[in-house]
Length: 398
Ligand SMILES: Nc1nc2c(ncn2[C@@H]2O[C@H](COP(=O)(O)OP(=O)(O)OP(=O)(O)O)[C@@H](O)[C@H]2O)c(=O)[nH]1
Ligand SMILES: [Mg+2]
Image 1: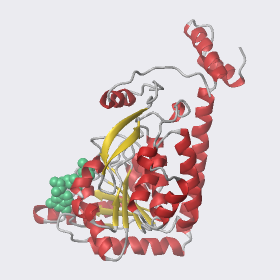
Image 2 (image 1 turned 90 degrees about the vertical axis):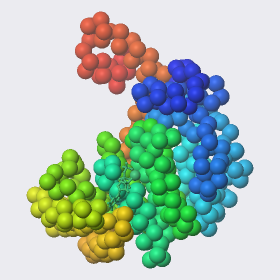
Image 3 (image 1 turned 90 degrees about the horizontal axis):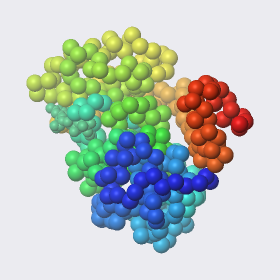
């Protein structure tokens, strides 16, 4: 572990978040550095005092934190009770387990790893569905309607989100908890706000691990929502079995600014708001999207994604969507693509974690930091080129 620098002062959470957004490497400051407390509505519906990790503080700075006593929210009982509670489907245990995963304190990280390892045999049994679409397309309305529909079919549904732009208070899914009121009230549903880690990699990791815990807790359908900021759709597509892209019924605007790459990842396209004045438009849009899909490479050769329409508001078209997702799943399983996709996802993810850990270790190494400072001075003085600096940095030659 390298020398630690005090960069950010202890501030009110709002300021800390702003700094994190600006990309300042917020590092230790007294006992709570890198961490702030906030009061959140717990997943069990109880307002709990949660210690939250400051957004944007993982990655390179991950090792630069002193432990903060987290037992106030994770409970004095740790690993064995939590694993058992999660396995028994206790919401409170699940919420605490995920909170542990989201923490970046070293002691919590060790516990989180143990829990994940213990629960590994209980994971993997769900259908993981990613949902994306531009703001206002109706994702939240859809998830509430579809979630309730799935519960009626006898399923247990967990809703997670990857939304790196969502800070503590204003995150879409956090607000959605009130919008998904009916779903949130059901025992068969579990809705978790987007993790608060500011960078996409961090949010992605936490969501991936949260999926596993939800599976161990018996949720057999996991819905992962993303509004599609930056690369987040790719992240969600790379952690789910099926990827659903929601679209607005304005056909004229053919692709609605949707990235072409996103359509290539889609297992199903759904034109929402097929109701009232926009019903006709939706039907027309559906045709247009079908045509558009023929011009792009499908996610799996020979398996063009279907295009359906629905009204999340009036709960129509939901059973067709569910049927289509089931048919797609069957098809993928018949072609052995379902398991293959998961294997790929797992291996790619392990590789990415390795990449991140290597970078972190590299940049927190004292000798590297020292040499980099020296090289920076020489760079600025025009004595060496950037590539020479890199060569020296990697070979550690002065
Ligand atoms: N007519 C109609 N309106 C809908 C439908 N689905 C959603 N809406 C409305 O569209 C608006 C946006 O819906 P949301 O569910 O909040 O959309 P979202 O995609 O979650 O939006 P963000 O969270 O901002 O990304 C709301 O006013 C909804 O009532 C639908 O099927 N038909
Ligand atoms: Mg929403």
